[in-house]
Length: 250
Ligand SMILES: [Zn+2]
Image (cartoon, rainbow, N blue to C red):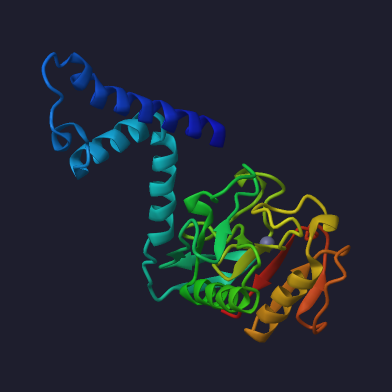
């Protein structure tokens, strides 16, 4: 990729120089004064850059624009209501988490890619605020750490989030009070860990501690992680070796 860009830049430069020089070569008479042939004006410089980036850098440019748009997506705050129970409930006036932020990315556990699909990113305003607050403080405490991965929350109006929505589905995540948060990887890659071996357990424990301090009523962790906390809040259950599941009070 880098080599391709360098070659492209050289080609663009060579073309630009050729275009500049050709009038001189074509000119039969005395060489024109320098100001007329040296493309020092911003217009020339811009068009040369524009041509090369339009021809070769468009996908990269488009990606950059998309990433900026993702990070600047506004949150439409509403006073949400969590109805019923996490395992049998629904969500009124939910709030959608943007696809990514300065300190987090979202992860689609079914398509195993960033970002998570929009309809899997809804929760109560309280849960969104709690998750963002915890992650912001975590990022401040660990300036070099990778962004935190946030997985499934609830559907736009809550309700069943079972296997028909992919994978083994969720028994809970029905009323906007549950969030899956991926453990940070030792490799600092932005994806879900494939096994406990990949997890930075020191950082993972810090995330667990922070959610507990933030008032979580339940934090599920994986049985092979060794992550701990107050026994009435932190519980090890199957299928949580790559993410923690946090629940706040309704
Ligand atoms: Zn969960």
